[in-house]
Length: 223
Image 1 (cartoon, helix red, strand yellow):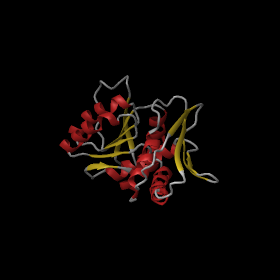
Image 2 (tube, rainbow, N blue to C red):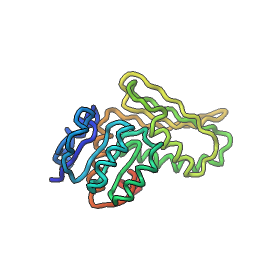
Image 3 (cartoon, one colour):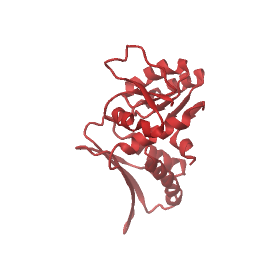
Image 4 (tube, one colour):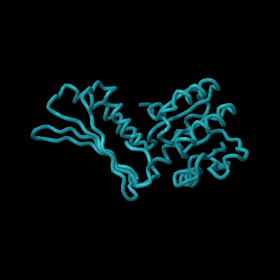
């Protein structure tokens, strides 16, 4: 049974720990702020659901060991090149995604198709709205930014305003809309709980073992 190291042991880390046996993993340890200075256990793969400022430290610790990593934390993209350089230098495998839910990644694939269809429709204006729990720090969410990227990759060039709402315990709801004079089109993904994110991260952890390079959930799902 492959050993799994958890980086971050908040709600998401604990949920991954609970579900790990279903995916054939033995959790060998959990690193949190209180024990980050202690020795890190060896593992075949690690999943990071910690904090943005901790991600470069995680890569610095694990890359020299050759430990592949799944990065579920968001908000660290300003240091992405530094992290990618370390990954390439040590030849490890990383799956990084703003959202690991399988449904969300299928949703992003749909958005690419919608972007291509709507690109020539000047009469429609696009918008994105995302809702998350009050404790989420980054806004817009990584998923909302990924939605905009999917539109751009499909050739959609018009401005796309992004609105963020933080309230209560909302796991995550993302809507893409197109509005014209007499009609509106919307597509929405809603997470009912955080298990979708944990399960997707565990799927990625199974997939990344034995691979080298920088990957996304599109690679994991073959999209």
